[in-house]
Length: 328
Image (cartoon, rainbow, N blue to C red; front, side, top):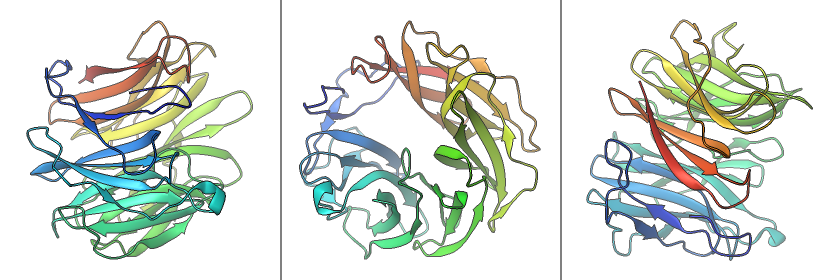
């Protein structure tokens, strides 16, 4: 829930009806341990309850973990500090957390950016530390957007940008690095890589910028990890395409991104990418009278549910709402 640049931004949790309406009485405020300004959150499901990680720019910063019951109630005394970050003026800042549940060992995995390093920690089901944190690698001038973390069947996978380009990294079930694949040219300006797993390979998306345009790119990576030659393709239409996000829908990937075909108002556009790389035509999904951005999507077995931010006065106006739409 937005505030001003100098006032708190609250972290809320709630349930949605099948049509996207907020379930009455389900809105829960998740307190932040440390800072007041609450940004960069990730939500995951363990099969029994939800975990939430968030990071803050104010106070003493850091990454915090909380649990929400299956009924939507904050679990008392569940909040844990994952990191021991201090204010950026002293040289450390922990931001952009990712969260995934490891069903093999019944534990949580958490990733985040520490300055230009990518970190990982293991948590028990209650959020207690299982050792670490450990360093996974180095990013390039910081990591743009969240540090995504997913469970990929027998271990974790994550992706970030570094001096070589976009790097996908596979981890074992305890967070040990198994290998990596580089997907993009390090000579271009790259933003916000993220990924999804189909059960046999990964789909990775990111933006590439020039002074006048931004393109959404997609690439496939086989487990191993091994990049698929020739799979790096532009999937967006003309104009500006920013902040792509991706999900696997059982037979194809769906990518949603911020689209500005005329350089004006931003809309959420979607495009489908088949297993062999066939790309559907991009289609605008939203038409709010303002600035639509920051899509997130999840597959429920039959449709994708997509949330996004709608700001009526333009980007960063802090007057926005979270809206919901479904896509076959």
